[in-house]
Image (cartoon, rainbow, N blue to C red; front, side, top):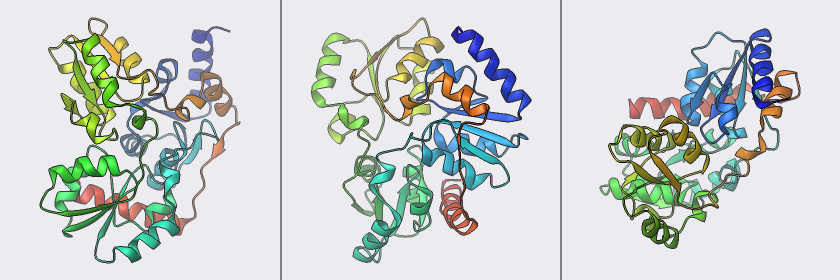
Length: 304
């Protein structure tokens, strides 16, 4: 069976079984082509609230599917690959965060959305990479415990100097594979290219960037820019997607090793099998869901 033939079968199945397919931007191009919506994780979760489908299939990693379920309790939510987790989300659990709160009793806990549903239940507010600065400026506390990504936290703290930050030593293994040496080599190979990086990168890498933003913001910047060449400092699937979106521009990976292996666990055949009933359903007890949702609601409140 060809890719196109399998895609047609998937499109027919999702109509037949009343599925909305959400695909994170780090998924492959052939999966994005069968998805109803693509983008960053929280944006996808909110989009799911606007569709009438009874079933949602998330092509991404588990914390993202949990967030979809938190915001869409009336829908059945499935994860395309049961083994697709997030190493950063797994760096902190509920008990660890409760211990950290005891160490920093007068700090507001700001949790990156890249955390489990259980961890979100004991956070004061969640943030995305695009909303983190605005939310941290808006929350009443002048002391912030930012978890789990200290690199994103460092980037936020530099833009909110009026507040005191504490961090845990967590981060995204994929983005941490990119180094200053990679920047030097990429600049030498492509001297006219603009460097666009994700704030999950090491501070020494973000310090060299022409633009820092979330995955969606990086893609929007590249599409709108008058520049013709770009070095992309985030998961390498974005290089592929931008090449399709802007074939008249050139895109280069900052590092060939910037690959999220958990995202790559989902293939087109996994999407097909999931629609046939072979997928993990996300189930959350109502107490966990409501407490986790409170931290997401505060993000929307503080971030407008």
